[in-house]
Image (cartoon, rainbow, N blue to C red; front, side):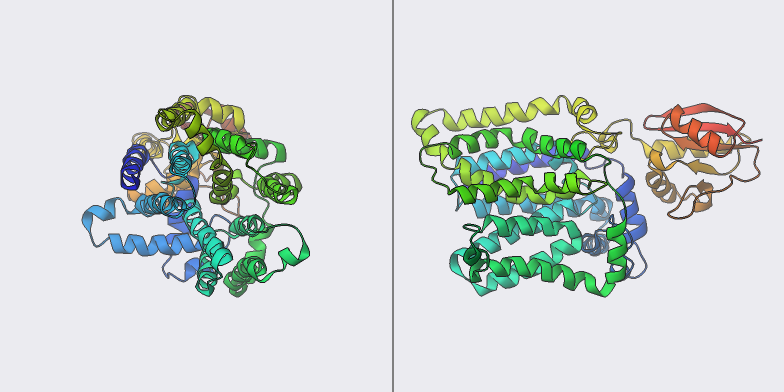
Length: 476
């Protein structure tokens, strides 16, 4: 049974991933490869930590993965995304392996199928970013913490430290997931329970591992924490994040509600409060921090949240088996498939309705849409500049995803000096002495702003490449 389920999940996951595996690199992915992964010295990935986008441990492992794949021609062509895909498949395999011993098959089946078919999984299972690796590390850390709590094995503490060290090294905010693990394993809020031998180490170890990882680069770490990046509204960020989770896991949430309110559920009120607090962690941070964190920063909580939902949903399965003895599992499968198919038909509408200012972490971000074609944009720029009197430089607007243009320009052998763009702490003051220049931005509104900034005489759209548009601007 387990083998059949794993085979089905592998086939479904592979089919989903294959459809988006070769999509173009977007802002953060291009930046990851150009500015972090491909630094001359491998240790520079750690030593030169300057912005939150630098997922240090992920970038180091990706660098080693790419170097290993380069020895095999076929693997070299798919090395960029294949590392993240490997962590996605490993996460699913370990989730089934760990949880089939703790929950009924229907519970694990529902959780896995909802995860595989969710829009966020589709995005991050192929992203050249550290979110899926974080998911994997936290999933294994949760199992290590459970085994330590249940059996007191010291080896599990060592493993827990190693995993928390790596996870915090990927993204510092992963410490939030370890806080959630600690809270979940607390029997109550009584002092003797909070500070017991079986719980307090699970709180101390992640904090110690975070400090141990970042103390050698503490000055850079504090500068990164002080950067004001995120969403301008805590309410908008909360709606976006919680909507993504609810839409992704509604079938499992329904089973959770049924299990929670079944007669057999005897959870203590304090335990219920702790569980509620775990689910409110993102909301609290969204509302207290300004600007609010990007919703994707809390993707690390999903393994813990899924485990909690499964622990409650599991008690509903016997009741449903008894009431619907024959068609229960097939019906559950149909419900999951139908629900997952529904949001897949409306990703753009969901993105537009549940995002703010074009920002979207979980539904249909711009880089997952068919009109995001940076390779075409680069080719058109070269073609236009080579066949007209336009100057041999192109200004890249930050909002038009300039790193993707810059990256594919390098891939095509275009000299870096061909592109002009603002850099951190250093804005472009002048566009040179050419009579005309090409500008890549998103729309007329962005072009108007650029025109005023550089006191341009006029401009016109010369090529519509979807998300990125090319304008010809007259400078004098």
